[in-house]
Image (cartoon, rainbow, N blue to C red; front, side, top):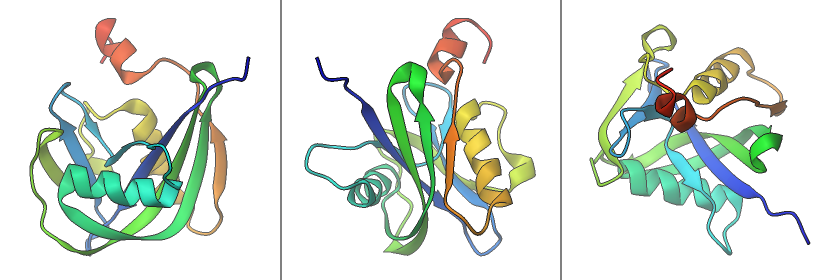
Length: 148
């Protein structure tokens, strides 16, 4: 049997003040980067553009692949892209009840921990595409255990 993988795509979008865009999820009290799962027939860069539009109302252009994250325990591969806003207006929807830019030192405590790691990586590494393994429990598992 062939192994199956989940592929996720997330966008790092900064504003003029160098603040990162996060979405507060409707289903859990968690902030995360705009993004989600890749759909059949999409390239990762098409998927992140679609996900950002769905979650924020913004149209973006992919500037570069920032990092490929592997979560071996979950059979998940994540592509994180640096994106810039082309046009559109931040619009709340059924996936996000709040959408806001944050500086690195303002990131809310209820932000998905692995995404906090990704945001810090983004601010530290300005030149090369990274490849990184992320291990440990998901944010949902941590919530269910009362640890987040």
